Image 1 (spheres, helix red, strand yellow):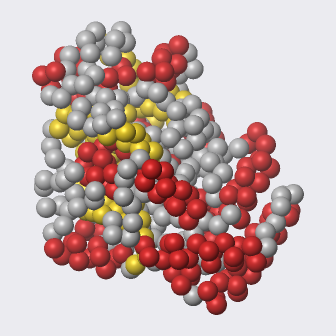
Image 2: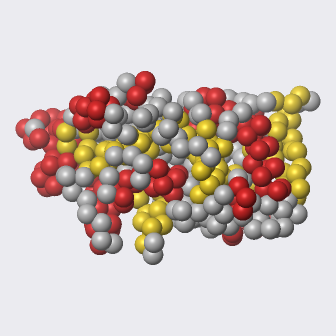
Length: 429
């Protein structure tokens, strides 16, 4: 059976948590392969709501969770998250959570620099969560990161911290922020080592054995394609590659093992923080979508900006993200609206574009070209088959398929796990 990679097809917050939870029942291993605790998945299971930022969603279903080398790991945040879900009755230990030994760590210096930089930008803020994700990825590519495996070699930590602090303290001092001492960071890392090292292993070996045995693997992405550091609305993006190809490099498995790529998209569009948003609605309809959809970020708590479905952006995400099918979520939020609009192009300088430009200035200049569709009076909430959907809702979904050039494989009609219409199981070739 093939594996499945799940990625966001918009700007994140598309409801990946529910979809990954739903798919995890069909997999044996769930792998996080990029991002950090700047992403959040909310899972509703019975009367429990789990908010996960680092833990792979499969741990809720008793599956083996793996945090891959493409993640940047905040040890304190991970241990706090394990503590929260443990208090809710879940078991998380080295028997069901493994962490790549070469994963880079987020240290206290990273969020400090993140926040100091954002403050210095003034009204030109990017909208970072301030959790140190970007600075940690910078250290990784600059070859000065402290990795999980380094905690097993305490004698080498001092010199590594010297090099890291030479860089970061210089920047912090220049920004007028407090600096850090090696002794304090070293003491913190040595205290964390015995709690973290039992989870560490060369996970690429485990994944290679699982692939050879035909074990089903679910690769769980964070953020979304339009936040990809290369392909998104730069510079208002995250600091990692979010496309499906990263599932290979971020977990240590060959690209041929990724399998089916499932993109998650809402039936409308949302975005948290700064950056271009061509279909944003600042009127009563936008407010209604936000209220009905409970549009608050799992991690940030910030209200999401809301707008009409942008088929141009999702089609672009389908192409660059390698998406073979969509899971469309929150269709029920559109219930009762008399008419719906779908963006089918962008107007700029007297021409109509069929893609979002790469340059930030051009992105800010485009205006949406809409196609208007009739809404539906009936309810889609809780529907579990096509027969339960109003005719206009079916037409809306079919039109989205045409515009984004990808089939809808899953349709989610409420936050409840089982309120899902399955057209094709992504795990079945």
